[in-house]
Image 1 (tube, rainbow, N blue to C red):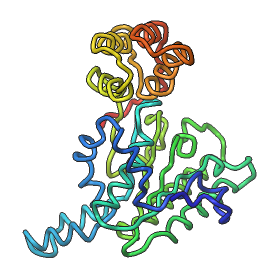
Image 2: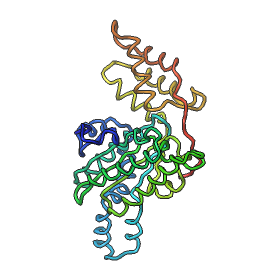
Image 3: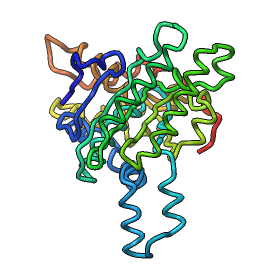
Image 4: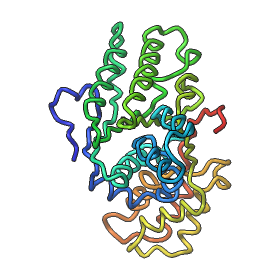
Length: 308
């Protein structure tokens, strides 16, 4: 359920979604590779969102008062998802938040920060809006209710001093963001912050040091592109040979080392192939293959000098 209405938060959040959410769950079912990635990250994410569960585990198997439990529960509830545009960072973040609430049997609220928090350049405006946003997030959190803040294009808010040069307002806003992430740590797992960025190296080092998890999203490989194409062309009569050719044509070997992204496949290639046939005839193998042959992948925006 999207609660993005006239509730006084429109300036702060692009969307406000009660979790679990059926629409997000339906989209999660179409995400190639979601279960594999979530099975690897889910438990670590769950501990950040439900710190008490770690203490319960320790007491059950090792006894109470373990130093390691204290160290792990003292981590910042911050996860950074980084990689090129169109590789699925944002949709994974939304799906993971939904799945976490289901797995921990908690209600939740997913709040996606709006780019409008950058304001219009007035002195102190961006910091004020960031403070307001975190206050709203904290108000949604409760003992049995999780609040997940999703910050997309995080480099626009959290660039390092070297990146933002001498813009005082930007520097103050970055410091405010870091301070608010420090503050939510005291809530003991009721708030989780997910940052998505195309430019990991541009983020402020002080922010990156606080990340409990750094997860890289690469452009899809052959198997992933094949899975997307097979799933999305189901029922259209496309041959396995045409699918194989399209997989090859959208790979890095055919495109000067840069393969197609998930977004390239689903929002550019497949719609363009359909338009070659629509409205006069059914889709043919050549529509898919020739579209792939004529199209190039979106350029890479990644600037990542930091090693996971």
